Amino acid sequence: MPAVEPIPLARLTTLRTGGLPERMVDAHSTDELVDALRTAWADREPVLVLGGGSNVFVGDEPFEGTVIRVLTGGIERLSSPRSGFARLRAQSGEGWDEVVAVAVDQGLAGIEAMSGIPGTIGAAPVQNIGAYGQEIVQTLVEVDLIDEDSGEISTVPAADLGLGFRTSVLKHHYGSVPERRAVILSVTLELEEVGESPRTVPGSQLRTALGLAPDAEVSLSWIRDHVLATRARKGMVLDDGDPDTYSAGSFFQNAIVSASFARTLPAECPRWPVTPDMDPVLVIPLTAYQGYVPPTQSRESDVKVSAAWLIEHSGLRKGFKLPRSRASLSTKHALALTNRGSATAAELAELARFIQGRVQAEFGLILQPEPVLVNVVL
Image (cartoon, rainbow, N blue to C red; front, side):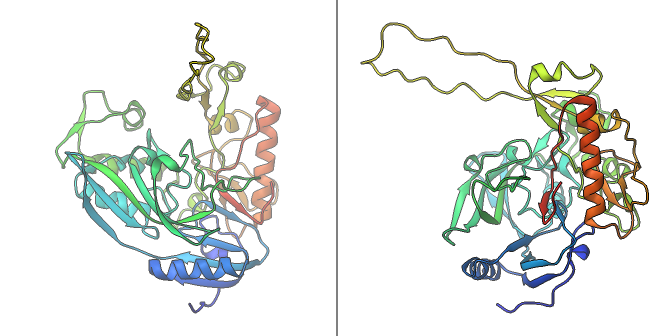
């Protein structure tokens, strides 16, 4: 398919960094997207698949390869085999918040707490997006994807995607490659049909964030409106007039640590238990059974700790920046690195490394970046 005139990636990413790519293709349909991917993969050239550009940190140098922009769209409602539920199937280029808006408008519950998260729905399962106690793993049924190695399209159930805390088998973590190299073409969610009538809000994390009592009843639209307002106060809803939103959202992941390590942190550091994996099924062949079954091993669950708290209590307050740098922490949210005006990727990377160093020196923990890093080294 024909290429388009390349656009500097600084104009297409929410961190506003990135050089000019060699080639660029705009895919407006699934067929165009599949064709562009197969062509680029066959040529064995570097490929950057770009949705909303909200979870990527791109270096200053020109991108020596092809940028494929996913501009596919469309949301359809499907029946569900479960009584009281319905499914939404969206093309990967559809905006995540547009999908949430449709769900809320149709009285479908399960993703309203994730209102305002930027980016496309095709990127959402890659890092198992979440907010206020909701994660896409809770409602995801399946995805259609195309594998890089074979070029084949398949429907993959959510259980096969290895969805965990901000991760999946598809995610390119810093310093590693994905377990499965593939691109999502569409996403199917299953949501509860609750209508617009007020009801109690499941999940203590969401109730706390919204200041609701356990027995308080509110509608889905009320939740969406108040989540959007809460995120806006933190600079986490994109706004061209607010430099605090020139970011990739939370730049560092909340850390998952052992219970014993968590006890070394100050007691006031916010933390949440992480449900441990169930013990694997123990199978003892009859020929080897000697009348003794070893006891199951129990262990304390891991703990998720607040990266924002660690940053602020290492002495780096909201709005912190290095001398003469155009990059800073958000003035509203200590977990967001922001571009205050034409900052280079090098300036943002310098700030990120400084933050990592301070937190490690103070608490003995190295924070890991959440966005995908392209031509950037921390």
